[in-house]
Image 1 (cartoon, rainbow, N blue to C red):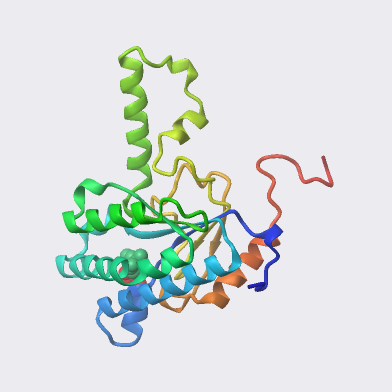
Image 2: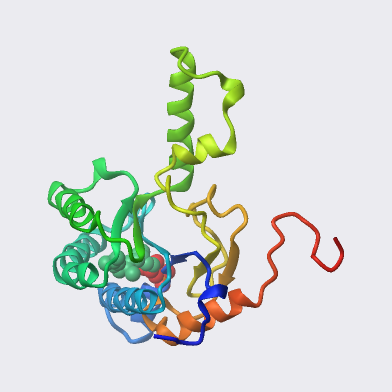
Length: 244
Ligand code: FPP
């Protein structure tokens, strides 16, 4: 599908903080869970759009390590939705040639969900379409601390010279190892924060904050976001070309 984008100006990696499900529900006098249900529909639509336009990498913030602090009923409802999503949508994801990865702390999620995650990763391992990554029980600071811990351990055991620690080496110890850094991070619902999402990886990402609540973020909004990205000038710390 051609869409509004030419492939050359597509970001290689788009990461999205899907925010605003609760407010979407409140506006309709519905329980928060209804907002999350609508949020899953938006996930489906954006994954379809991403595969249709041939995007290489899409990373979605599905559950943060802080989200466990929400009321048990809401956490339970979200977990139920993840189960449903993996059960209902995986065939389509496989058909669309996407490869699924989950980044985050797997040890805290219930065993059946862990198994579903592993199964989804296994089933899609050989796919070479969209890299579809879900950040689940994910926190950026914890991720960096875990990488530091691993490198420190190697240094303490004499397997690593601390002088050889480079940003590339740190990157290789993050959950996202092997994925390019995000070019574009979108957050919906008007909040202007990164909320511990891909902190290291977003060093040079373009940030786009849109007021739309996540359940209303549709294919058109996604295309508009990509269009806005294509008009930004990225310099990575260098001077603009006209000046250099
Ligand atoms: C933020 O809305 C969203 C989340 C906490 C989780 C995102 C979850 C989904 C989009 C649904 C499930 C996803 C998958 C991959 C199946 P919020 O509750 O913080 O909204 P609020 O700020 O308006 O209260």
